[in-house]
Length: 97
Image 1 (cartoon, rainbow, N blue to C red):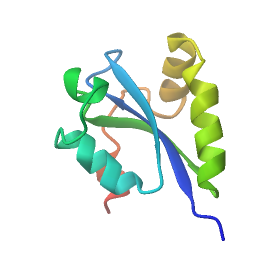
Image 2: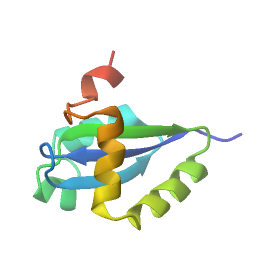
Image 3: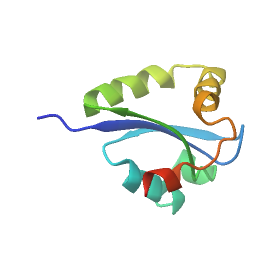
């Protein structure tokens, strides 16, 4: 049996610093970023705003997608965010309904 996964991008503001990650529990992981419980780049750059995510049926597919996207230029990631979230609003409130 496979478990689902998510690729996600956190940001500190529109066109600001971003963090790309993968998780099996998007709500929990976004909460950890929001509360600065995650050490490293996201905490150092205040990336607390969930601005983009993509759901996958299998966590392994999500990991493969994350690796693919980590090789992308920043402009490509920004374009991906702005296709669905042009204002870079925090999607946290949409996932915790």
